[in-house]
Amino acid sequence: MKILVIGGGGREHAIIWKLAQSPKVSQIYCAPGNGGIAELAEIIPISAMDIPALVAFAQENSIDLAVVAPDDPLVAGAVDAFQSAGIKAFGPNKAAAIIEGSKSFSKELMKKYYIPTAAYEVFENSAAAIDYVRGNNQFPTVIKADGLALGKGVIIAQDLAEAEAAIRSILDDKVFGDAGARVVIEEFLTGQEVSVLAFTDGTTIRPMVSAQDHKRALDGDLGLNTGGMGTFSPSRVYTNELADECMEKIFRPTVEAMKSEGREFRGCLYFGLILTDNGPKVIEYNCRFGDPETQVVLPRLESDLVDIMLATVDGTLGEVDIKWNDNAAVCVVLASGGYPQSYETGYEISGLEDAEAAGAIVFHAGSKRVDGKLVTAGGRVLGVTAIGKDLDDAIAASYKAAEKISFKDMHYRRDIGVK
Ligand code: AMP
Ligand code: GLY
Image (tube, rainbow, N blue to C red; front, side, top):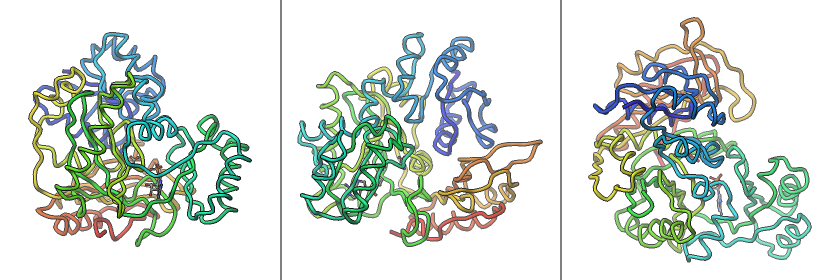
């Protein structure tokens, strides 16, 4: 089979690393890819959002399966475009991707189908939104832009002034453009956050092993929010009982709700959960694999990812046996100094072979090759993943490997996996 993967981050590197192990695969292409992906796939210089060019490439090269990994092309209808051209594509269609593309949609879905989530209201008018926050008078309060905002659309406001500023910047100043046509104002929940990704063909749901993410830039969960500074699997707090409860109250009701709404979801559905004193609740849905969660989840998958993806697309997931191993995995993200604010790129990366010799898998998030040299090309540069018999083992192995790597101003957290 010839497979085209759309995207170019650590998540896509992990997906390709796993697909490449399948005996069914003869060739993998990746658009636009990155410097690490280039070792496993042929890099195609087409942007993930240039859907007509991606479809034309797939037709010209007789692609058997397109895997659309990032949120933006999914929400924009990339899977529909591949399917109309007669090409199998893994991922939800546009109608189903709205579960991530519009937070007001997903909140209304949860309310209608009694799926546990934070209490909320939706506003289009800033004065009404501010009146609501003032009257409610509960802080912190959570302000969310309705649409996709590069992971920056959630503001936890500590007081009325912060809430007012967030509401005005989204609704009046349109800092997120059309993604901020509406805001969702939510009750602030506390508890550990767990990510559960699940394969679903619209009927059968197969949750993957659990993961937890470290979103803040600095040790001890301090500093600014980032795209993720590291991740580990399994979660220490997500027990089998909780998994059963989530299946019954959250996973199955969500998949059934989407079907009832005429928006059958096929692909990877990501449940961002928070474990509150009143039980697990949904913080967010994503219509795709999580990044960096994928870098610790897929290394624990024993089965062939191609078989699972084809069954997900074809609606035969119920017939596939999916096996996971009992190991633990930890991914430490090596970031550019200054990230998530401004940072420099183009610095040479060294020590990768030593890190791999130490037993780690190094997934590239933001790297590229320039004149044969590997250089930094993003805020998050590498994800150093190691497998161990338990979390402590995997933590030690991933830090041992991470220490072998260096580039100018490299920054990483020292406490990944210890929550
Ligand atoms: P999101 O962009 O939806 O992943 O949200 C970013 C982060 O904001 C989440 O991972 C949570 O840590 C936090 N967050 C979002 N919604 C809430 C909420 N209702 N209560 C507490 N924290 C939240
Ligand atoms: N790790 C969070 C996400 O993929 O959105």
